[in-house]
Image 1 (spheres, rainbow, N blue to C red):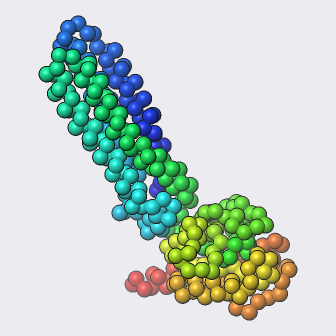
Image 2 (cartoon, rainbow, N blue to C red; image 1 turned 60 degrees about the vertical axis):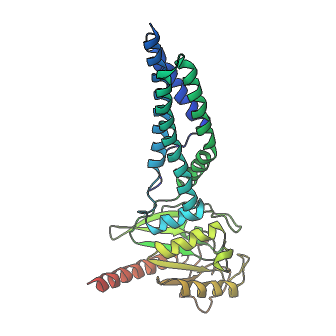
Image 3 (cartoon, rainbow, N blue to C red; image 1 turned 90 degrees about the vertical axis):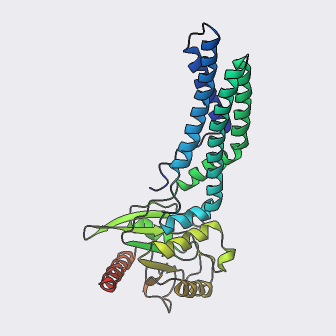
Length: 325
């Protein structure tokens, strides 16, 4: 997955401890016989510490993926979860710190060679370096938090995918659990799904994905929260077809009128085919405007809904191929 290889980002204290321990070992490895060897030992301490810090900071920057080459789906999710511009600014601070530490090390090595006491100069250098690293502690902590959040994103391929959408608690997670390998958390209250969950199933030797999205609420885009924006990003970028689930019984806590209005908004916003399915037919009557009905509680017609969706994906894929010819 695109964010999986990002390593843990250390704090400033952890970086300094590592660098200064290695520096101390570098000095202990040298025999101090006269002023010249003493100077070499102090230089070795300073350069070792500077190299360790610069290497760690540079490695952290390089391990974050390039946002300019990232697929739009992951770019939008990263922007929603942590803010791409903030990520870039914090990574730039680490790059600045690494370069500054290298410059300081070279400067103080020159000062050591002209000083009567190289140890005093080296300690001054360590103080300046420690101040630089301490100044980016907030950046390091931000990046580690971003790393932890981004690594939780599911891996979604460019293959055939079904995005399951609708109001909270209408049965989206139950459908995904019944038809795929995913085991999303299912509880009888809204907003159980806090992010995207991806399941897989095979049809005709082709691996399909089914994506469980957080519940969408019928309100303007600028008023939507982080969880809802993830669902919208999935709808825009990864779905070959959308399963929109209605709850005619309204036990989800939202009126059918509101659910239908959200459906109309989704149809206006997105161009992918949409299959509208009324769930909970075991406790409600069929509803006008639904293409099919099912019950994720009893399993009634769930397989038929899935087969219909697979057929819609096949038609969509064939149409896309013909448009490219």
